[in-house]
Each structure stands twice: as structure tokens, then as C-alpha cells.
Image 1 (cartoon, one colour):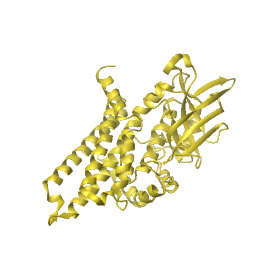
Image 2: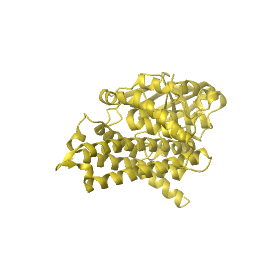
Image 3: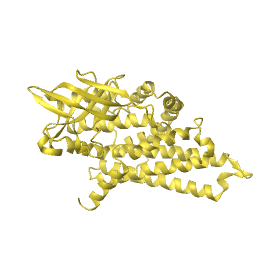
Image 4: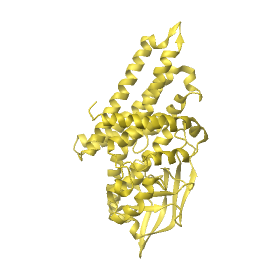
Length: 380
């Protein structure tokens, strides 16, 4: 590979933790559809809830590639835990670290990095999904406070069951279009702010997903993140980084499915011999391994570019697009290799198959990724 051996040693440490602590709980987390507080607490002890946070703010001070490896390895054994960590770090903490004032960073980041609070990002609305510029939630300055009204949907890590800190977007000037959208920090329990019912999802069932409602919700004007009107630009930058983590999650899920398929090909016998000796199965495994390896190269390259301070918008979109669609391809082929057994909940593959789909939708659909890539290629 193209990095220092320290990353492989680091991967070994992360994988050991995942196999010991997370993997034994993965099936139960999915079956119960309940936030895995014990697993997330264990991850916090490992520093996984403050991976990209400087040590001075209570974080682990990891670089992006190390962070990517953690999300990949965690998702390899449990997609629910993987997306909780990815959303918390990339979308809950990252915007505050990038755009927050020194006072905001000191107040909000340490509790998030330690795991005392879980981070969440409120962007999507019923009329503002792929068209994020269509935000309808409003924030009106009233003296020393902003008055928030509106709603968000499909928000990861949204829950009243644990302490949560949110970065949300709202329109502060309707006349300025996307330049009239701003970002705010808000804590769970704020009067006028409530979390809706937990969504019943196809996959990633241990991750809380819910609506957010703002009904004359008052927050101090100091909760504005950056300047008024900077919200759209801020979340576009945040999503560039978030796509690396969702790509890493897709990569981990695909790697998990590939591992299951390789083992099954050596064990399952048809027509008197292991199916892994059949050329049709060998070619499936060859294609699956190629997809996983290519995904890893794209995701890691975008992480390295980000760490080097170089532009990575195109690369992160390419990595997220390819890795997420590869996860769908790999899990499908693995299901074919398993046959009827893969369709049963007794095997992890059924769960991985369901978990993978979100990766082609969350943080920008595959169609949006292609739009981002095309704009970069054509110079907008």
C-alpha cells in the first residue's frame, strides 16, 4: 500500500477491539433496533467519539486516514455502530471545529469528544433533500435570541434518550436564496425543540433516525455558527468530509460481506465439491475483491488529500459513489454465493445486505455524487 506501516498496526488494534467488543453485539443491536449505549460507551473509551478533534479539546487528534480506518473496521462488523460514529464525528463535531468560535469550541466540543453528548446534523427536510438549498426552516433574530420554526427529517443520531448536540440549518434571509441560509448549534431539551418518533428502517436499525421540530424555539444569538448566510457553504464543506466517512462505512460493509462469501465458498458443497472450485464462483469473488480494493484506494486517496490540505471534493464524491455502489454489488453477489442461507437472519450477511443500501442515499445520493463529480470535471 501507499502509507506508513503505522496505519496497519493501527488497523490491527482497531480490528481487535471491534472483534472483541462490537461483533458479538451486532446481531442483537440490529434485532432490537435499539441504540447500543454500551458499545458507544466502549468506543468513547477508545477515543472514537473524538477522532478528528485536537487533543487540546479532549479529542484523539487522529488524522483523516486513521479516522477512515476506524469507520471501515467498525462497519465491517456492525453498520449501525459505524454510522453512529461517522455522523457524530463528521457531521456533529466537524462543522463546529471548522467554523466555530473559540468559545463555541471550548463549550461544545469536549462533551462531544468524550461521549457525554452525541453529535447530530440537521439539514434534510421534506422539501430539501437533494436540493439542500430548498431549506424551509427559519431563524429570525429577536433581540439577543433567534426564533426557530420548522422541521427536519431523517436525522441520524436524533434522540431524546441520550444527550445530543445538533448543528442545524435555517433560513435567516429569504431574499438571498442559498446565501440566506445559516447554521446554528442547539442542544436537546431546549424549549420549543423536540425530537419526533424514531423511524422504523430497513437497515442500520441500531442507529436512531428521527424528525426534528422547532416551534418558536428560542436560542441565544451566540449559537450562530460562523456568520449569517454562511450555512450553505459550511454544510457543503462538511459534506465533502462526511462523504469520506460514508464511503469508509460502505467499504467496511463490503469487506464484511466479502469475508463471509469467501468462507462460504470454501464450506458449501454442490455437485460433490466446494463451490469455490467452480469458475462461476471464482469470478464472482474476483470481481467482488476488485470492487473492494478499488473502493479502498479511492476512499484512502481522498483522506490523504484532505490531510495534505489539498482539494478533495471530487475525490470524496468519487470514493463515496464507487464504494457505496460497490457495497451493493458485493453484498448482492455474496447473497448469491450463500444461496438461501444468506437470506436467513441466522447469518450476518442478511444484515449487511440491508445496511449497505443507505450508503447510496445518505449524505448525497449516487445521482448527486455524479453531479458533484461532473461539475468538478467540467470546472462548474
